[in-house]
Image 1 (cartoon, helix red, strand yellow):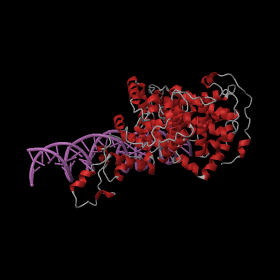
Image 2 (cartoon, helix red, strand yellow):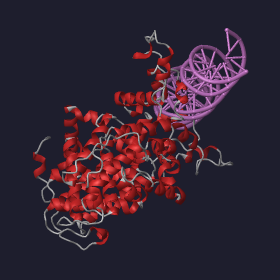
Image 3 (cartoon, helix red, strand yellow):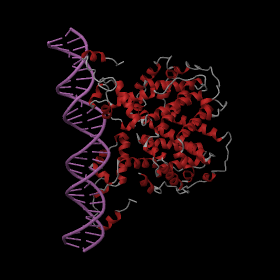
Image 4 (cartoon, helix red, strand yellow):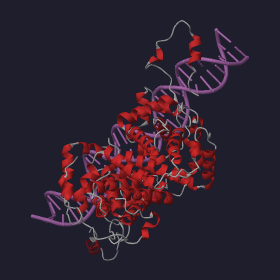
Length: 271
Length: 271
DNA sequence: CTATATAGTGAACGACGTTCACAGTCAATC
DNA sequence: GATTGACTGTGAACGTCGTTCACTATATAG
């Protein structure tokens, strides 16, 4: 909404349209622009490189100017987190089994978090209750409770999947440690080191350790989600356990239970 | 390696044991003392309050002096992480079912992490391969593979439980956000806020949200662990499958196992 | 045209990690 | 016993950070 005060400037000098505000110039600062630039810094150089001075420099402004639009760096963190979480699309397709819905959401959440390196740490450390975070929570809770989990259980299941996803995204693939593992040589070195461990003291690590540290992240994440869903499914009833590998394109299972138990849960106070 | 140069000092003067260093005096700095003081700062004021200058002040020393014993704050982080992980007792009781072993270990890990506020974030962000972290990995992997999970699966299961535990500990109960939730008034406020959400946009959050944010942490952690174990059990097969593959490990490995300095040397190598 | 609100400036403050020339101390050597 | 030399700790500095504050420029209202 902050667009067009350009008219005033135009009327002032007919001859010379200053190269102006069109794309980069003197466009006035707004909170949105500050947050957007913060996101740009994070995407480009990671959250640990986010400094007030860097943002100010990119905006062609002196550091102190930012404090007209943002109370503190802490508040900026909250705004940034909300903006990032808003990038998770929260529309769901109710025609699809619960595990597929929740799985797709978790995958989107992980993708968004890993596109903003270092943001997961902030998210976990602050855990703000913001509009976007509520939308995410709703998107998780709806299919879980529609699947038949009573309210309390649905909330626990949500936190389980959410904590796992954020926790996973924290081991961020652009961190120096993970980056080094991308290099085949260091990977070989790590393998060799792990295998060289004394077999009487670290037998399992020596044997399987390489999978635990160097395996493909996608596979690890999806496998974890599958295990998690199997556990939730078992909780849901001894019915059928869907083969979880292909949950993204599964056949519809049973629909029409949406809005089962909404009324009940409002009865229980806090435990 | 750094222990006992005291012998030399003793032999030097038979008559007079200088009142000295007994408790506080001029005792020389060592890497261990620096790390220990760092742990003390973290336990007392959290990891975000850990500064070189704070450690130096507590040790009655000028900041630059620390750099004689520690290359950088980064290296100090690695040393601190190893020291913290070493506090997780890794001796297992092979007589109990795998889920009990893994569960007990995960609970100990969480307890240790939450006793050092803010440490989980460092652990996740750095994920060092240190002596103590190898010991923890071994303690997780052994019962899992002994339970019949083939090596690859055991490694994935270990990472799943480990990532969940560390991720959970990250939402640290001493953080300002969680601390505020301890206060009944703010809790009521949060409840009221959640229930006041537009029921057409956030029905599930309005109904069950309070469990997701304000429920007891212990209950949440244990419930998550249970769900997780159910998932792993399902993966293990409806009946226990005694896979002959990895059973060498279910023999008690090393009962008198003091978790010693064995692999310590290699820690210095990777800093 | 003047008065007022406001967005941005420039300079500073204190805390941080880190470096470096120097001084103090002790063991071994000449 | 004096000299050397290796270390350990000192004091002061550098550059960066978040944040504050008195100021100036600007744009609108009366």
